[in-house]
Amino acid sequence: MPPRIIRVLVIDDSALVRQILKQGLEKDPNIQVVGTASDPFQARDEIVKLRPDVLTLDVEMPKMDGVEFLRKLMPQYPVPTVMVSSLTERGQKTTLEAMAAGAVDFVAKPKSNMAAGLEMMMDELRTKVKIASTANVSHWKHKQYSPVTGGPVGAKSTGQTPSLKVVAIGASTGGTEALREVICGFPPNWPGTVVVQHMPAGFTKMFADRLNGLAQVVVKEAQDGDPIVNGRVLIAPGGKQLEVVRGTGGWKVRIFDAPLCCGHRPSVEMMMNSVAKNVGNKAVGAMLTGMGADGAGGMKAMRDAGARCIAQDEATCVVFGMPKEAFERGGAERLVPLSKIAATLQSLL
Image (cartoon, rainbow, N blue to C red; front, top):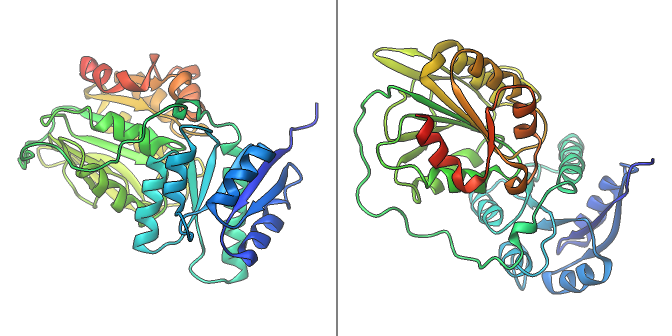
C-alpha cells in the first residue's frame, strides 16, 4: 500500500514565505500543500473547504495572531498544527502560548536567511509535519480555553534539602502541555525531579519560567552542578545533555556538550541511563507523549536497577511513540492516563 499523502495548509502573511514553505514541504513526495492563506480569517474558510491534515501557522500575523486563532479554532475544529516561530524572546513566549492553545510542535526560523539555515529549518518542518499528521488532537474538541495565568497560592519552599528519591521524566511532541498538567499536580515538598523535554536552546528557560509561575514546586532550567533537592524540578537546557550524578550529600545534575543521543540533545535516553546507574532503586520514572523511542532503553535500565516506572497511555497522548516503546521494551510497568500520572508517581514514591 502506498504511503498516504499528507495534505497541508500553509498560513503566513508573507507571500514570499508561503511560497518558500510550499516549495520546501513539497520536496517530500508524501507532502502536498493543498492551499495557502494570508491571515486567520482566510485560513478558517480554507480549513473548512480543504480539510487539511496539518496546518503550518506563523506565530505573528496581522488581524489575529496565531495563538488567538488556535484558541478559537481548536475547540471547534481540531487540526494538528506546527507553529513557525521567530527566535526572538517575544516569539518564544508566543510559541509557548501557542502550544498551550493546542499546537502540536514548532520550528524556529533561521537567524539569517542563509541557504543552509533555511534548508535545516525546512528539513525539520517536513519531519514535524509528518509527526503532526499522526497526532491525536481530538481532546481539544469542545474544550473551553482558560488562560494560563496567575500562579500558585502562597510562598514556595526555598529549602535546599537533598532529595532522598529522584523523579525522572521524559517527553517530546505534545509534552509541554502534558508536563504542565503533571508538574502542576506536584505538592510543594515533592522529591527532586529532572525533566528532559525535546526543545531547542532558548525555549527551555522560558518554558521552565512559565511552569514556575504555575506550579507549587520551584521549576528552573538546569545549570551544571545544580543539586537535586526537594520541592524543585530541573528542566534540561535545550542543546545540552543532562546526566544525574552523585554529589556531596546527594545527587546533582551534570550539564555538558555532547553529541546527539537517540537523535536528541537533550536526550531522555542519556538522562535515564545516568539515573539507572547512579540512583538505582531510589528513582521513579515517567515517559510522556512523544514521537520515536528516545528513553526506551534508559527506562528499561532504570527498571532493571530497581526503579519504578510508568508511561502515559495512548488515549491521552498527542503521539503514542515514546510511551509505547518504553512499555513494550519492559521499561514502563503500566500505562496511565495523563490526569493520573502525578498521583501514580506519588503512590510509587
